[in-house]
Length: 111
Image 1 (cartoon, one colour):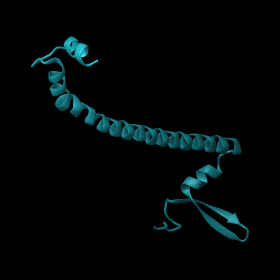
Image 2 (spheres, rainbow, N blue to C red; image 1 turned 60 degrees about the vertical axis):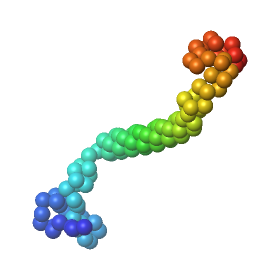
Image 3 (cartoon, one colour; image 1 turned 180 degrees about the vertical axis):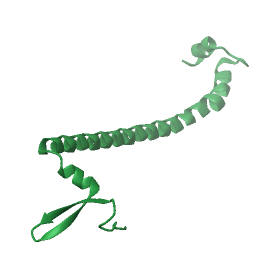
Image 4 (cartoon, rainbow, N blue to C red; image 1 turned 30 degrees about the vertical axis):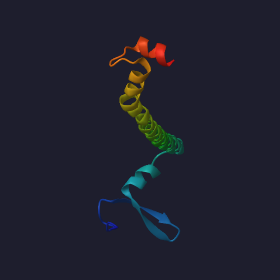
């Protein structure tokens, strides 16, 4: 990364630090001018925002896991659908002796 030269607009203040002067980046110097209560309030806001982002990520992760589970369950149920479409009709015809039995005839013969 690049460091701006001391005479650029990126540095807005020079603060004494012991026997040396320290260049303060402009964003930081604005924070140094705030009173401690305002700094604490901003820190709490940042913490709350960070917690909200973490919560949103966790919720997204849980939703994605739930979706994956539903998808897998749906694929397992697809085998049952295959049974209903391919295996059940011949079994119902054999049980009732009819070519196109209705539900009541199938129920009486099979269940």
